Image (cartoon, rainbow, N blue to C red):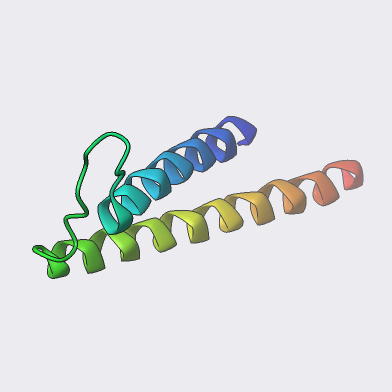
Amino acid sequence: MNVMVVLTTAAASSAAAIVYLAHNGNSGANWLSICQQFDDFCKKISGAVVASFIAVVIFMFLVVLSAVALPKH
């Protein structure tokens, strides 16, 4: 279960970095923001990032719940 928390957190964090680039671009690398042209796409990927962080919180809750239930056995 802990591995799932780590992998989900890593995936959500890397997706958040890409969403940040999509919204703001990077002038140093000459990358323009694409959200001005593809607004619907940016709304969808922003929602997906929020959903992935909700999944991280649920996994953390399950780990804590498992740790609390473990001493009872």
